[in-house]
Image (cartoon, rainbow, N blue to C red):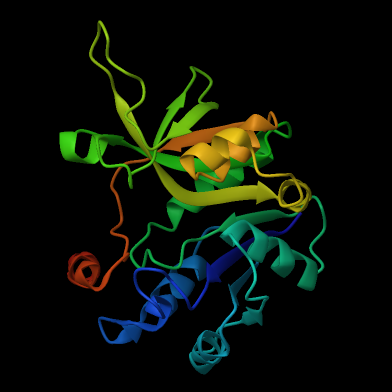
Length: 245
């Protein structure tokens, strides 16, 4: 069983085209992400999966490995499934889906996801969550919330605040989009039809739940800043600066 980190990076980001190459503390953002992925415990290989020759060349320029994939993929999962086929990964291999817009992510967190799949062969996916305390974050539809059971298996993901606190105070968790998949499941997942709940909420992970996938939620501390728009660059640079103090 191999543990492979794949970083999907498309050029045509809606809010920030070409953001993978934007300079963060003097290096392209994708380089920060790649170098962190290299130090994830037990990772054997790291690849950027991109639709852009510019991104592929930039990765190769700093000594990284990159795969050129189709520019017709609708999601990162589709891109990673193509990358898995290009790399001829075995069904039992574990893929870590590392987001290309988190240049300060903690490499220990993806390792927790991989270990959860190794420990429980019935799991298809594992992903991260963090507790929310700010009302603005809880009510922000761009911050996806997740509810899970006592076994930490996901019950539902939503852009709305869940659970709704009718008679008691609720604890909210934000879903962080770093995943571990079994390769066999990822290949199967991308051929499933779009789910009804997925279509309503525009959340791909609901397709997995609608098809009875078991998704383990690992709660972690500390949220690494995401770069969604140019105004987010400063927060990412500050996070990296604090680490290097």
